[in-house]
Length: 106
Image (cartoon, rainbow, N blue to C red):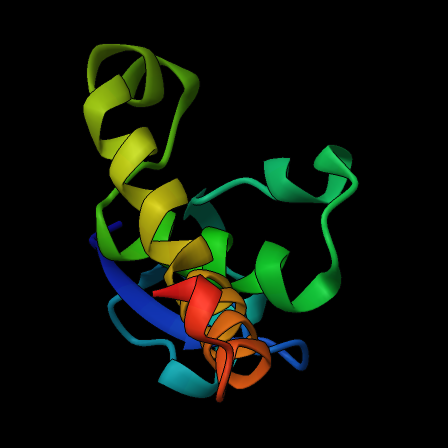
């Protein structure tokens, strides 16, 4: 049996890659053999939005297995940084909003 890889997005907005038989429809991707990433982010206690961004960053980098995560730990770090980038911008914006007119903040 020849298998092909298909990406799909679940109801939470998370991307996954699965393997399907050549004759299967892409609509069946959720029933395929999971390539990755595993739902490791669910055990980290992160807010759902951050967990989903981290999960999708791991997908974008092809971090499917523990072996790949260990071998490519620099990519895990890059995924973490990318997942928190939006939160960093929000923190900076909050600082800027509070610093408005504050001469001591410059």
